[in-house]
Image (cartoon, rainbow, N blue to C red; front, side, top):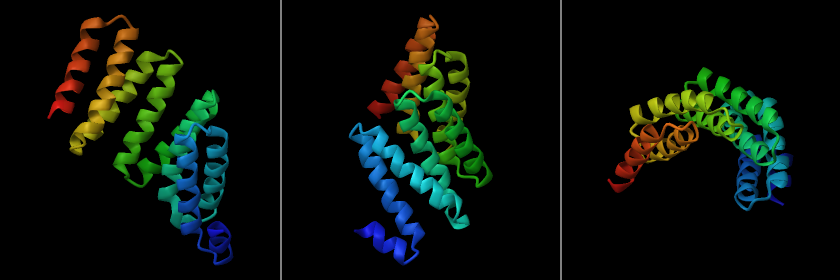
Length: 169
């Protein structure tokens, strides 16, 4: 198939893009183990191809998500942290925000709400500076859920209102 053609032609950029897209499809279909196989192969390709560092950061975030879905939390955290380091090094601000958000969601699921809140705030700082209001609104909902879990009802409702206002615009 296409993957074999890209391998033979040593078009690792196209191969990694194809496998990444297949992994995303598997992930969205709830087939996280199959998605992980794809993302692991993409990571291997990107780690051996210096020109694919940007994709390495992005794939690491996707890999972290499926690891989290599989309940492999320490690995999910490590993958997101590695992506954060690469994205920061390459000044990929949207991917830095995505890595923060990925880590924050994992921490939230683990009941580490205060840690999650700190990372959600960093995410919001980047997204609001970059005019990504819709993305920021979804993060506001996550902040709201953390605050509600901490018993901070008024603050939680305030963030939920902010999210609604952003979606109404």
